[in-house]
Amino acid sequence: MTARRNVRIILASASPRRSKLLEEWGVRFSVMPSRAGERTSLKKPSRIVETLARRKALWVAKKVGKGIIIGADTIVVLKGKIIGKPKDAKDAARILDALNGSYHKVYSGVCVVDASNMRAVTAHEVSRVKMRRLSADEISRFSRKHLDKAGAYAVQEKDDAFVERIEGDYFNVVGLPFKKLKLLLREFGVRLGRA
Image (cartoon, rainbow, N blue to C red; front, side, top):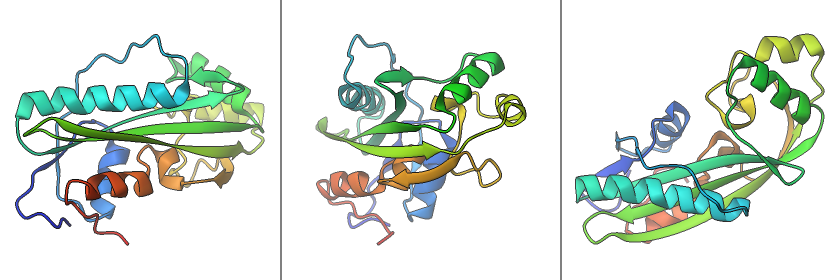
């Protein structure tokens, strides 16, 4: 749902989780995955996610020339070290073992761009996540399940139950911080349908 009539909203991400969230929030949008590079020499997690979210949104904005583009990027940080997407099931098992029973942080950057004038606004959110203690058997079983997700887990998967507690925005852990996105879209006259 938007305040501006006939505004085209484009999600610059192939993530089905982000698409599902926007649908739940009442947003009419189309998807155009960004092919912008994700390599960076930046070290600070907040700068990384903001920079990559902006890069993705701008890449799509340049292609379409018109509309409101939403870009996002999410990383998991454990003891100051960035945990990316696993390379394979063995790497996923290593990641899950490292996260096992501990706290870590999830950073998501979000960027909104008006493609007609390339005006961009960017923000990030941080949530603290406590993982429950997993058995070796659970780690082995789950290591094949989420190879496309940072941290090798999906908080929204009810049957996984990896997460014991979340401090902060739940939607941030899924990959799209609701409150931050709502504020950024408002700057372009777009209102999210969810209260």
